[in-house]
Image (cartoon, rainbow, N blue to C red; front, side, top):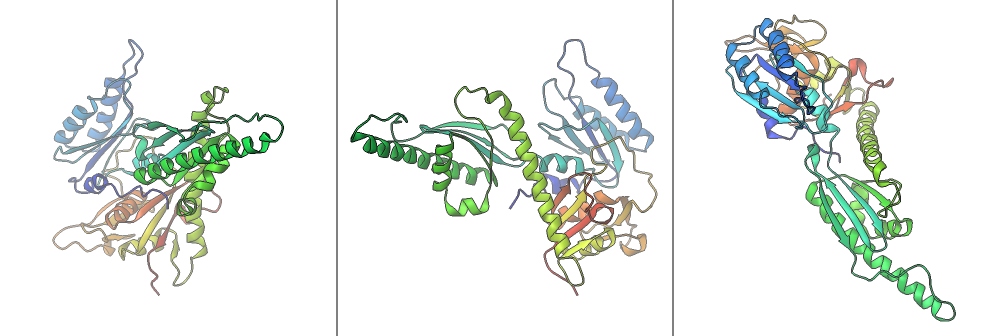
Length: 384
């Protein structure tokens, strides 16, 4: 089962910020000498938000927190309530252009899209003596590295001739197997500790096979295992490894999203667990029925929007204070003593999903088989 990208309590907390909420994604200052346009970029974002009616307290708090970004640090997402309460998240490895929003809900989907692209995983490069292990925690945190030394001395491939040849080869095979077994133990423990569902394996082909044979059967069935070329030795593959690992992780993320989409499509229909299109998905969210919300990637993390004054159109939805207060129409949300709010459709759907403990999967762009309007859901239970 892939990482859940919505289970962070800090994400839940964003929906308690008093609206309208300011959201800003900003890259750090350039690390090149004499090049720093951060102040200019920040002033441009603040000007957009001020014209959308953002409060002075919120703007002052946003400028203060984004002003703490330093050269060489990762991009950041900042969320500010109208009373000046601030939440800030670093986004290591993110590729999100500067953007700012003022809306009734925080703009969390660019951050969740980044989180989906950074699952926990482990990379192990094997040879007959042991392994080199890199464990990457979820969310792009600092990777943990370790060398795994096998319990047996390495015996080379070249064997003496005569009657001792077979005995020597058997000793060599036994040594390699013991070392692979030790590597399998360490990797299994590391995967469990990191709650990782992806294992990337490379290195000596024979050592790799011994290693895979000795992984616990449960782990082999629950973890996705992918291979990359190259080895531990200085064979020239090391400088390509980062790109190869990144490509494998992207492949894994896309496969998991497409697998969820397939489950939604296979189970769609009257009384089924799959729903497609905004209307059916909204109705399922209003019943706290959704297990995984599916959203197309189009439009995530692009441009700059001041949405506080946006009118209700097909791209918006209405919501109230409770997690299940969600509707396509203003009259579909009853707020005793108050009025419902509205915001862009995908973010209102995300709010309902997060607050009802559903996960979110963001689909790769350009899918011809994507659900209607890029919206669908896999449900926990069916309703006739």
